[in-house]
Structures are given as C-alpha cells and as structure tokens.
Image (cartoon, rainbow, N blue to C red; front, side, top):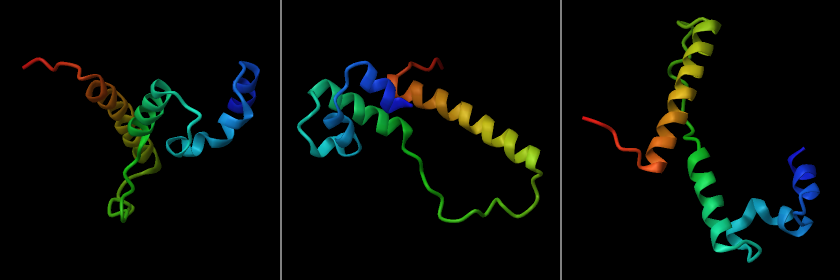
Length: 89
C-alpha cells in the first residue's frame, strides 16, 4: 500500500529499493536522512531478553489494557523527549 502510494506521488523505484538501508546510499538529501534517522530513533523497540511477567497472573484483558496504556504513554513520552517539550515543576 505505502509503496503504491509513494510511486503514485512521484517517488522512484530506485529510492524505494534502498530505503531500508538509507544510511548506506547516496539517494537521500541531508534533510531526508535526518528525517529517516529521527523516525528510526522514535520507533526503535527495546527487545526484552525474557518474559518474566508472563507467569499467568494477568488475564488477556489485563494484558491488553496494560499494553495499550504503555503504548499510549510511550508515544507521548517519545514525542515530548524528541521535541524537548518543557516539563513544568
């Protein structure tokens, strides 16, 4: 879907082919490289080594609610940290 949209808006197949390794190519401007680096930083996930929390003490509904709450808070925190949003005392 995104590839079709990008092509329809004039993006080239060459650039789309190398976007997964954008830092190794010369196809992107400094501004595009900065945007791609920022997008990767904001979306990088920490991978836990083991699932110590998964001991059966949470219901499916609880796991879902906690996951959504953590996702929403993480999104707000990433925006605030990346934009240097001032936090009042």
